Length: 465
Image (cartoon, rainbow, N blue to C red; front, side, top):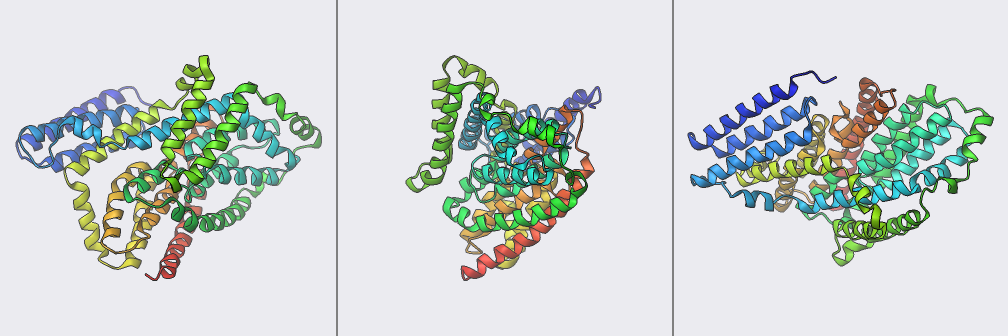
């Protein structure tokens, strides 16, 4: 439970941080160090999980904006007007997140996902392992078209409902679904927000990403599925009694449709979304454009319920991203990201093998303790720089792989999808034990990193690097 006074402590720390940053800028003329202190201080406070991360992210952006503006006023290199800072924020990614939240909100309210869940659960006949496998396959499939948070918001509530009805422990399901949603999203540019960020910076080709990583995703899924079945054997070895299973799984799925109009609109919208994501990039139509078009049409057709659906959008996540991307822009303006890129370039040199392994393991380790979004946003320009220097064309792929896998090793804190699973289990007063997630997540993560490193080196070999 959060302790009283945490907000006061945070306010004091933020005030000290702001004063130090302004003194460094105005007196010592060290704009880069000042912005770096704001960035580190902001994420140190966010990582405590004792204060609102959205509020802290926006406050960090505001302080960085003041520091950058102060540097501009006194003529320091890297100083800029606040408008310049805001202009360079990754607004296309933010629009994508908003649009996908709208689509999920409308579809969920129609009963579409409940309908699908019962359809895919019915063939299991109450067999726990069969149901577990079915849900994991479903998660892997939709992770190619929905970001990890949306995937968990779709599947996790349905998993809890069905597991409770069949008297099955839902915690192994939620942990496994969160892990699968992270690595199953790797082949898709829209599968995770970090993928979109990295692709936007490095100009990573959507088709190249999919063709390269789809075989790896299938390999990881098959290996993970066997490990998870073995790990949770005690929880999944049972079978719900025939009477209860029939009572739950024989329900007509159409009775779960809450609004036939919204249901039909959602089905058409998701089909258009999938088609747009698959074929749009070939015509220069980027995923955020497709998502915004579909979401806005769904709101238009919702008419009087449009505001209700907008209220369900994850606005805290949206504004967290605004603050995050603004802080990264501040680092870019002051030249800190270029300096970090030069440092990493000096470390890896022109050794393509070392550079690839470096950009798999180091970002993965960072993503284990930090949200994988800031790691992606900071390291994407560095991967682009190394690629342009001719080190290796697979470096953006290595970074995509790393930040997604790193989201579940050592801690569940690196990926928002994990936190959705943990939060929903807590809401059911049956929380997922922290160490239970850490153990299986770290085992799978280390296996995945080793397999992925070898796979990327094999891709380099095929490409003649």
